[in-house]
Length: 219
Length: 233
Image (cartoon, rainbow over all chains, first blue to last red; front, side, top):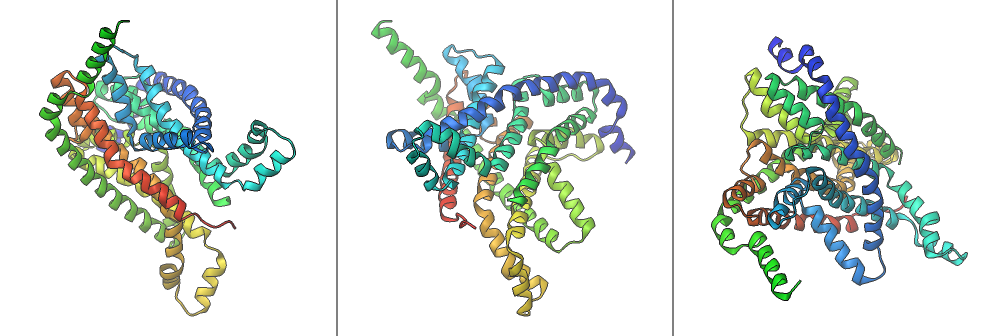
């Protein structure tokens, strides 16, 4: 038990590496600060394509979404980061992360919005259009808000997934929280930095996970 | 740009990403990785979903202290990034005398994550069955256990199948994380073939193999969602 405490809950080690991990946390938050908003917006664009009345738009979009939902994000990331330099396209690690995870999250957000749109009764759109609203106005003021409300727990839960996804950036040495923690572990020969990182992730995400559980049971 | 330049660029692209010689040389190697990915995936799905089902049933029966522990387990494993769990098990545990092979670490970590999500999904299914069904079943003389077994759980499972399929797919895709701790699955083998051959073709093959394994499941989940759509209430 003492050995366990020494290895995982060593407060001295935690105090020593805390500033370093905080730097990693800032990088994680930076990643989230652009991945989440861009993912949320591009998901709407993807949904507009996959629910388009034109087959020529809809089918390729659905095929692309399914393709990228079957593509493990880490494989996509390694492909962008390690594959493209071979044809002379050397992308910085941060750009590779942005490209790979946006493709991945746009597909997932897109599917969630689509499920939301399907859940809005057809009559809503027809009624809105018959009052003279344009197609865009109908989308923005009538159908989309209801769709979002219906799938709010799923949108939140995908956002949690996206935050967790940023840890994969550590594989290509982006100095985000988990990468810093793992580096600190190898320098201190002690696993407490990893536990500290886990605690930070819990502090960040547990409240949202609780909120999702409450929203789901209310619905 | 002249036509000849464009041609050579195209050739270079094919040579780099779709090189037949390289594909022949490393194809079998990477295909074996797919075997590991599929077997590990099956193990994760079976362990994760059964554990999640068991926990949800336990929560329906259980008293306060049991439920508290289940909720804590579920919340923690829903919040933690899988890679963090994998690193703790793989690098931390040997220092307290517990050495686990990397494949076992991968299986345990992802199973725990899937169990947490599955418990939540089954539990949501159980709570969404109207109270009247419990009362009606009990008043016909069924015991509590029988009601749970024959009335409530079948409905909860049916309700849970579409979200569970999606969740199982996205968690199983994390098997690629095994490459970070040296598991010989598709990505791990493709990565080492990449550095040995100095060519991106192994990575293309790895990516295509992953898509080939998962795309039938993704399409199946789309069909399931259509067929199991819960009526408006």
